[in-house]
Image (cartoon, rainbow, N blue to C red; front, side, top):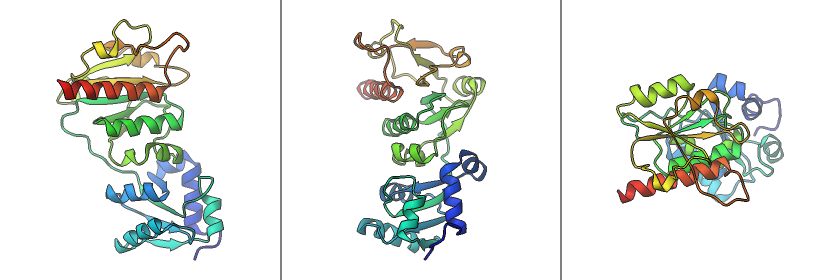
Length: 262
């Protein structure tokens, strides 16, 4: 049983949870909690090692046995120590360290979401979860967007990262991908509350790339330069705009609705 904070695996977990640079350098993430680890197993994510404590639930014990059956490195940790290293207020008693998932891009991509300088982990995770549910084929992140593999984003996305191709691209690369690299040319759309084109009166069944801007700064100038069209989501007069995650989810639902009914 691991009881010391000086243990190599404990130190590694703390570094991965706390430092984006360490996650990016090692291309390794921490997946914490029973349900998220279950999602990782379902997605056949490779596991570097698994740590668990005796505070784990019966459902969690079953997950540990699955990991052991796959011959991955598994060690028990003192419960108090597990609580100390956990990124949550109360640890569920299980976590894994795993390589970033390598999800391949499909040959034909007809629905892409660009997240431009999204800073809030909760918004990022919610958008990724909605994207996975609504059939998005790729997520493109502009430089400066929050880390999709941070602990808070992982929890909010509920494992969507295991299923979505996620790439970092600047405006030029996004335009090239949407217009020339992909087998299908995509129209690049952004949200603008002043646009006269209302989302449900616009053809969103065509191959498109939807840009969602950051909560504070909105869509950056270099991204605006590559946009083909702006659309709006009608709303009442009391607020100026929707939360980024809400706007993304509304648009993805409308795209899915139009495609189903086409």
